[in-house]
Image 1 (spheres, helix red, strand yellow):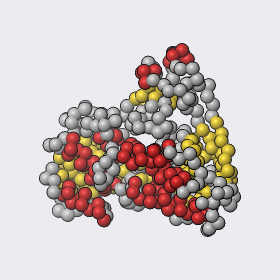
Image 2 (spheres, one colour; image 1 turned 45 degrees about the vertical axis):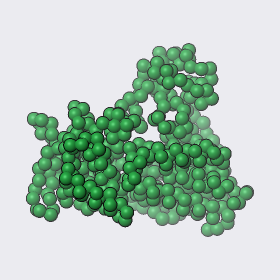
Image 3 (cartoon, one colour; image 1 turned 45 degrees about the horizontal axis):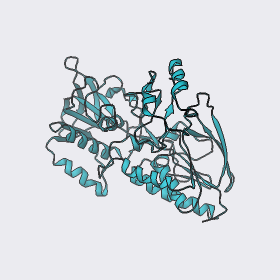
Length: 420
C-alpha cells in the first residue's frame, strides 16, 4: 500500500462498484463510492435469483454490506452523481452533487409514520408496477437502510403531518442539494446498465399489450418483494400464467436495434422458466431462440430444462406478436427454422428477453473517455488512472462483473504505486 496515495473514486454502487470498493479498502486504500440511487446494489437487487445456483441476490449483497460496515476507509454518497472531474496524474479533482433525501438519518423513523402519509409515488424499484408512500424505504434490504422523502409527491397536508409527528431533527423539508469537492488518485467506472427499450420493438407488442412483459419485469413479478408477492400472474387480469412464451434476442443481434449479443439473456430466460415451473406446477413454457448460449458449467442448467416435458424449445426469431380480440390470448408468429413451418402459437403471457445497454450510452460522464459505437468503454478508457468495471465495459453477468472489479482495483493500486 502507498500510504500517501489519495482515495480511489468508484462511480456506481451496483455489484461491480461495491466489489471494487471493498476490495480496494481491504488492501488499505481509502474509497469514495458514488451512487445515483438512494441505495446500493444496483439492478442485481431487482432480480429474484442468481443463476446457476438460484440463490437470492441478498446472499452476496449481505456479505458486501457487512464488509462495507466493517471498513472505515469507505465513504458512501447515495443519491449522488459526478458533476465534474479534472484529470491530473494521481490527483483528480472531482465535484460530486448530492440530491436532498429530506431524511437526515440522525434519528430512526417508525414505519407507522410513513403509513400515515396519503400522498403516493410510483415505485421505481418495482419498475412502476406498484406505488409507495411519499415517505418510503426503497426496498426491504436497502442499504443505507434509511427512508427517502419524495418532496415533489408530498402533499401540503402530509408535509404538515410530518412537521407535527416526526421526531425532531429526523426530517428536513428544506434540505438542499449539496456539492462535495474531493481529490482522488484513481477512478473506477462501474456505472452499470439498463435494459433495451422494448417499446422500440413495435412488432412484439410491448406497450400495446399488458401481457407482453420484459425479462426485467419478470424478475420483479417472480420476487416475493415484488408487486404480486411472487405470484406469476398475467398483468391484464391477475390470472395465473399457465402457458408462457419466452422470446429470445428481443432487439439483440439485430442491426436495427442492438447488433451485439448481451451474453446473459439466454441464462436469464432459462432461469425464469424455472421460476414459472416452480410457481405454477402445470404451466408450460416455450422458448423461441436463435441460438442458446450457455457456456462452460452453465450447460448443465440448460440440459436439465431440456428434460422437462413442460418446456419446449423452438429455433426461430419471433416476427410478430398480436392479441386475440376474443379471449385476450397472445399469438406469436415465428418460422421454425428447423422444420421450416410457419407457426402461430397462442400464449397467456409473453416475456421478451431484452439486451443490456450501458448507462453510458446516452449519459456520458464529465470526462473525455473512449467509448465504442455502442457506448461501452472498450478496453482502455483513454485516461491513465481511470478503469472500467462490469457492464460499463461490456455485457456480463454478476460473476464476470465481480472479476472485472477486482482487476480494475489491481490496476488502480498499481497506478497509485507508480506503475502504468
